Length: 431
Image (cartoon, rainbow, N blue to C red; front, side, top):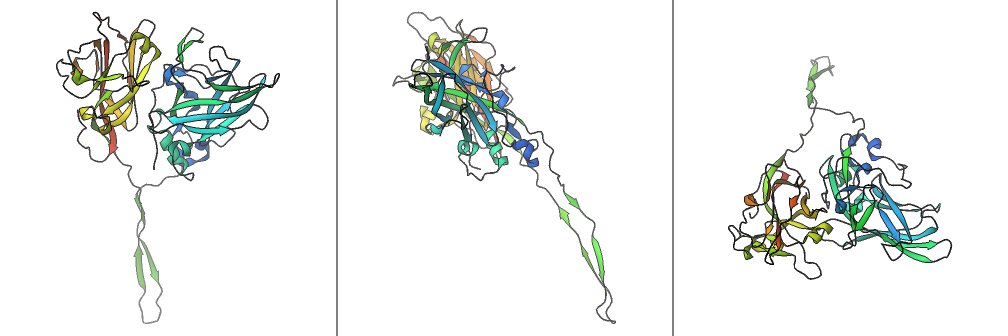
């Protein structure tokens, strides 16, 4: 099956209460309840939506604003999310004093090289809000006739656990019922900090999109009758003679049925990954390790020089395996990394790998330049023997270093990556 798959974040423990707004009910068929062949298979769970750029905050109804000023909006609304049948559904809830003209959901899978795709929709016929439905077939770029079983396998590529990550934008127009003025709407910026309510107190205005992820659960429906490999005893029949001189004749037959064993997955070492930060407005953000003279630095890989302020806003980039000579065109893109700092300046780095890749070891270096050591085992933080997790964060935030003499802090994001596959393991990529 041809699919475009993206992994997302490990779900945080405990879900926040659903935001206000009329949530869609399952008026369409529930794929789990309707098909016994899906018993025990994973399906996307609407109760696990999270916002990765907001420290994995649990939210089923992200916000949008009306007007031209996100900090002082004319009005605000919510888009409540739901999985109904083979669709991801966006329900724009009603806004007091306004009617919808149209809306567009722009989407792509996080890390995908493709540009945003637009899903346009009009007001609901009853005038109550606006609904957009994104087919799983569009997300996975497969035929409209693809079976539900194959669709669920693509939407839940790792089984009943964390799944895909979307980059999303909302746009559209509403009309004031009192003045007739037409005003734009768009998604709110990702939240940077929250108070105890938890109300957002500041925003990450450098993003023109937000991210959404979810987990998958198992379909709890009665399984279809199954057969196992069996052999029935021979059946002997006796035919009557065709003439008085012919003896009776006998024939013997047997029948058997069998089922094929599922393929066996194995874990293979895939190679070394380094985090890279793409240039911003033409400004270089990643620098090669081989520009440093420290022990073990004569190798491929990168470091970044973020300020505390930049980390508190959040920085991120791709994880590349096998970029020998720092040549990204030779590398394999295996996921993303995200680095954030709390109010005290303590730093957390999160690894988010795409299926079928998993983590074996992670290493984070956060020190002042120049780098004196580039061997990952000598970094500030090390975690080994990770049990094939697709996502990982350092459990204790790292202290941002105090650098003197004009020196800058350097961040190195490194990992040893495995691949889960069927068949023979191949030699790892460049280390």
